Length: 540
Image (cartoon, rainbow, N blue to C red; front, side, top):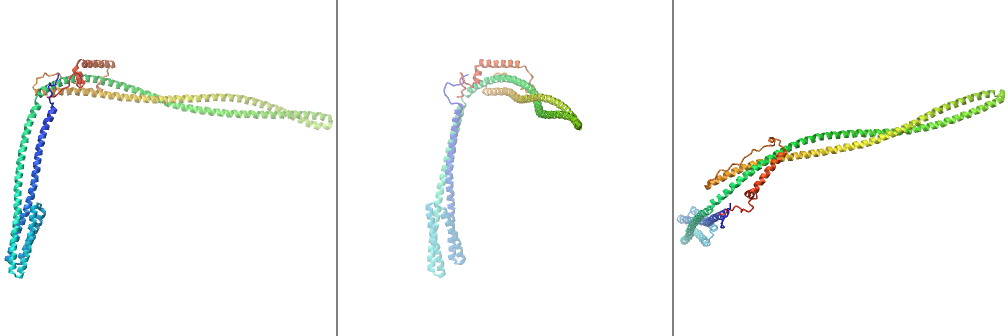
């Protein structure tokens, strides 16, 4: 529906701004006029107040001067000290009013009259003093002359004061006429401006409201159609959000199960890592024991080598003893032969030689037995050395194997630790995925809730359109209300088949795509009015 007019007119905003701008201008003009006249009235009132104050001072001076003249006359009739004191009191009062008038009255003509009055009163006071002196001197002629001058000066002062009062009265009358004129002008101008504002407001109200029914009717039709499409879209969005929330809940449950399995596997790997650390410690101790045994075997081999060396030395000594016994035996045989040759004289020597030979033979026998025993010990020591060497070699092999075993166990322990750390990281990633899935489920629930809220807003929009139609006097057929689905929480979703959920989601997406493709008005609504259709124009 095209809502533009054929001729260019002002829209509502422009008309409201123009109308209210004119009204504000008229109100401002009225206010300015009132303010201006009030300012003038205020200035006149201040002048009037000044005039009243000056008039009060002048009246006080006139009345005080009259009292001064009365006290002067009383003194002339009864020249006593009391009457003279009354004169001085009234004189002081007059001088005070005169000083007040000099400071308060600033108008040049009146200030001149006040100065003249001060000069006259100074002469008046001098003549009064001369009269008092003449009375004291009992000079009737001087007294009469002074009284005549005093009377003349007093009349002059009274005329000056009355002239000042008359001038002030004339100024007050002129000021009163000026205030009345300003008041009449203010009433006239404000009445004219008020009437103009009333006429302008009436005209602007008629201009603003003219032609709005037809435009508002068209706008109400467009809003009604948009509300129906919004309700359909919100229903589809609600269904998609329900499916998404169910899928997110199932994914969250699967992630929780996977997290539990990973947690159990992490505990197993952690125990394996701890056992690997213990095995590594045991292998380290076995390696240390093997290395210690190897060192002990090396020391024992060195000790047996020293024993064998000592046995060889003893064998050499025994051999030397055997050779000494053999030589002794030979010497004993030679001695026996020589004793036999000597006959009877060599018999004792032959006995000694026989004993020596016997001792030599026994020494030789003992040396041979000792040599045999030492040889047997050397052979056994040699076999022990060989066995010790083989045992040392085996212990070295065991130490090497223990070292390799320690290295392997350390590698196993390091690998188990790395596996434990990796599984912990996987567990943290799964926990993060679980939180993300739960947040996605919560977002899906919020989307479903927002879709329901959008349905309710569409209903409220349709009711508002119905109210607008009623205000415009249109008869509309009731539109079907969009379905409002209750929003399920994650605890209320049942486990669903992921393939079925995917098929349902694909079907809903295809329906939405076909709806958007087949309906150009909806496409224009989603683009915000940008397309082949012109935007809504509210010009009236």
